[in-house]
Image (cartoon, rainbow, N blue to C red; front, side):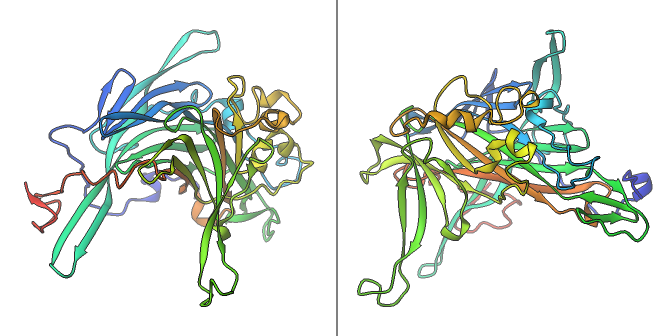
Length: 442
């Protein structure tokens, strides 16, 4: 039952077509590799190792181009397996550093990989002899409706205002052996940036004896098991929030102790701690404290007198279960911390170092931070590691439904107020359903 083709698996008969049409074309403009959409401007690049790279990401605020990111890319990745037996313990693929997710990018197809009014970009990489190799339709650009952007119903007057959220999607998909990884950068009208990785494909599997229950994995089919494993992604964010001189704070929410200032035992507040040096800026997520990290420009203030900033909001995450003496832990030291912050150094490009398949361990971020460089009001690079924890299940067989994982960058005091107030009302032309006060007739 490993054949997943529709000729064998069958097709459900009741799914009606879903068509996305934009008669006037998409709202984005593409000039070479410079992309403009809804006040966003970004230059798109592509490398054999990293795949899609974002350069000089900015947002137009009241007619002024405001820089947010100088460069952003997924720079490393590792997949540790939890089965210690001889045929499995070494399965710790560095999909970015060893194989290159750019080399392995798919040629995307409209209506299958991307849906809607699509524009594609080819990618040019080098082959094994140094020649140019063109990957057709490697990068997909399109817009998506994303539900409600903002809304309020004034019950006193019966007046409603509602706006639809639209996001710009810039994506590519890489096939690394048995797995597919989709990398999706989203840009939102409220100034939010999101990276979402979609994991699918075919899990690594093995055979077991009849009646055997595997210890280091789960049965997915009779006498077929999938080993427990994890996927760790390391993203390098060369921040430039309104300029190159930035600082990074960790923000936690804490409960106030009972006392005269908290007589009802309900008080809680946030505490921000400056990550002043590279030694201090090696951090873990903490959902119990609502932890996030804020990148600010101390020299630029908003109308409230606070430094402008962006915050990194973690999504689902996990730590590695491989021990500190495991080969994969030594070679992929980046996965032992969720957040690293370094002072910019053009030589420090990859979380696991330049050649992860040729060093026994310690290269990359553990080496970069050894000098404990100061980080206050300087050119900082934020490295975020996020992990997917895969305890396999029968529903992952024979091909896996997509698992989603990632993070967001959200403005925090970067704007003086909601930057999406000027998004126009949606047209009540059949897609909205009725001409409510918050909509207007087409």
